[in-house]
Length: 106
Length: 155
Image (cartoon, rainbow over all chains, first blue to last red; front, side):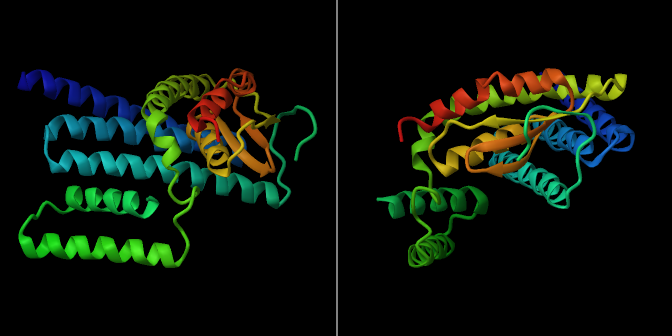
């Protein structure tokens, strides 16, 4: 059973690191600010979620589990706010995104 | 009523975070929670927006759906970044929620799923930037909008 949990934990860490690496590649590769925010969002959600899941599996049921879940909750509430602030500031400075624009923008 | 529920939530959080349950420390915790509620009352922070209790009954179902959605769009974003086939598009969508909290939840959910970001908000129109027309169609199909409307209930 211990071995099984260890394997699942390793898998979670692997997927988490993979999504962080792909997100980092995206940060360099994508063309403009708005597209790069998507890559950062991938690191925020996929990376942290899988790492926290792996750590939760290792701790079992204790107070530390609750604290790890709370870290997840706070990251999930704050990361979209920072993404939105970055995108909104770029739009306020009249930076137009690359690519198609459908309809009248605000 | 709202003050009592805020007190219960704060006390629960305190008990989970502290891990020490001797009489002195617990009574200090209860006192500090009561003080926080007093300060929040004085600053008139306890209203529908500060403590959206009407969200809680349906929040669990919504979160499970949101996690599933985030996982799927994470996979798709990874595919797009690796293959390099990006066609960014910007468009506006209408939010049908009536309360501000629900609108914020909707905008946050759009931003939280990788591949779509809310860039501007004006009244009940959102300007959304999507990495690909598939992500754009996901938002334009208004599935998430309806889910948040359901989460809000009849307000």
